[in-house]
Length: 336
Image 1: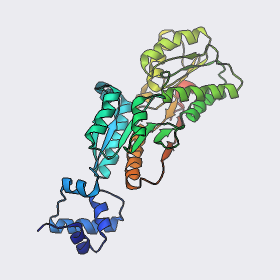
Image 2 (image 1 turned 90 degrees about the vertical axis):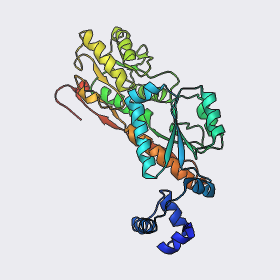
Image 3 (image 1 turned 180 degrees about the horizontal axis):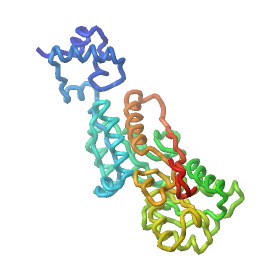
Image 4 (image 1 turned 135 degrees about the vertical axis):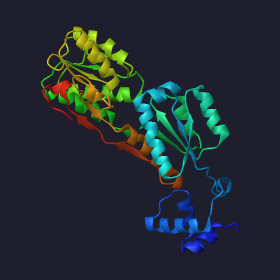
């Protein structure tokens, strides 16, 4: 016998909408969920995915767009952490994932997403201030959540951390330690995080009446940028360096050691992200902790909530960060 949702509702003593929420992983009181699941088990009910898609207009699949090389996704702890967080949160709501990477141009990727039409909504990493793919998704009819931000677009839903405030916090830490010639090795020019962290640094320096002329070196979020940024900053007489991320800081640390510069006695060093390797550097790295996996998970939850309540307005979430003080700025045995 083929059971309908109405049949299941009658057997369970709940509404048809409640049955639907249980089947789709939506919000339901746990006692109610268990009662419905017991009825499903007793009846041997197995919902047909295609029929559910036709009835609800939903596929139960969301798109995840990270326009980068596949090797970088699985080799970079930041991107792999984002993906892990999204995957876990989507699994909790019985939702599948379709992944787009940088195998094609951004225009081709956008066209594919719109043409195929298999996803209920999209999560996209918005790492650039100007990005035709992100702008195209926001302009489309596809529900979209950004990891990153478009604060100037009041209709955009996004999940991010307050990079400006966090960068100012770590810069003030260096200032409070008595450092006055604080250099910054930035992230990529035009990147959302890179520009925000540069802004936070310059704001904190200006508030303390400290100069930044000749103290900023453009980087690109990798160890090579850290290595390349150290010589001009040493030439400028820095007594501290704030790097835009931990990968950059690891390269800077190697260059400082090779130059015979003591960290932190001669030059204090700080990063951003608190990735797994940061605490294992010698000396351990002072940095800003942001939970990358939490950002991915929250973006997934925001998109699923947006799909459940499309008229609820844009969701704009800034997750907290934490200053983790270690020996690269304080010396001694101060740890996280």
